[in-house]
Length: 390
Ligand code: GDP
Ligand code: MN
Image (cartoon, rainbow, N blue to C red; front, side, top):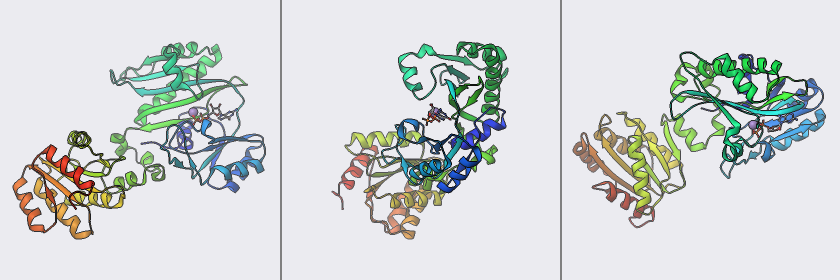
């Protein structure tokens, strides 16, 4: 799960990491008031779940409260398109208004869990700012790494190594090391999957401070962080993905094709997407109802299909295990009872209680195209989406 920069900065501050003074505004008038209170130059920052705002016009400097009001008005209510967003961009509902900082140097600092050995790794670089991806590509040696032993925790000597490596002076090394220690503590206590400060700046006064902040959280650990879970901003997500989340379908990803897929198990879902492509079509989504034996989950999946105008055919490919086929079949029948579904439906049922499932579907009176195996199902779905079956 992602959160906004202003929320991430509040957490950094809770963990004693210096951040600029500021507050969040939802209207231009609020931005003006905050700017007046801060005094002097302020920075207006679009709050979206995406980076690359600087280059996309989402970060602006205002010299007066009136200018802050005007600039906030230009950003609020628009959609910001950055290299990290879809072409439609993400809505800007809030701006962060902060006292402008005199930047001496822009550094980079982050923690992720390394894929290779599952250890948290602290990454630091003197080449911080807006182009860290470019640095990683062109001169990876400029990014310093320290792997963190989970039992021992982040060690002061590791902090000193990274801090000296970024060419900080001795006083800054002390501040930098304690900042890193605090960032790791936050990362661990809050079950983050990513903690990134880019840029971490050295100010003209020689202080070290987080000018930007990005925190992502491990979804599987959210149950023990209700304070974080409630920070979630559904507006920032694809509306269908947000709806799927609300309906309890955790594994839903919107895609660009026209075949709505209802599948159980992520492996089967991926195989179905591959085979649809192989049969000459494109999936409209990745949807895994999971290993649940639950009629309403199936009904909810159909609710998603009927809300998505790009879906032209539905493919149900179920291999019953813990989720029994008869339950899925009841779900399909129930969905057609509750909603007026006019999409061609291709069904392939196998596994636990498959025969029972098939007779439930047959008795329900729903029109559907039966498929015998995997490829048959994909082929028929592709034809159905083209209108060849209806
Ligand atoms: P991102 O582009 O989405 O990563 O947004 P950032 O918060 O990292 O801001 C991008 C850039 O704007 C930074 O690298 C800075 O160069 C600049 N910037 C942001 N805040 C300030 C500030 O308070 N003062 C100055 N001088 N520049 C700032
Ligand atoms: Mn940044």
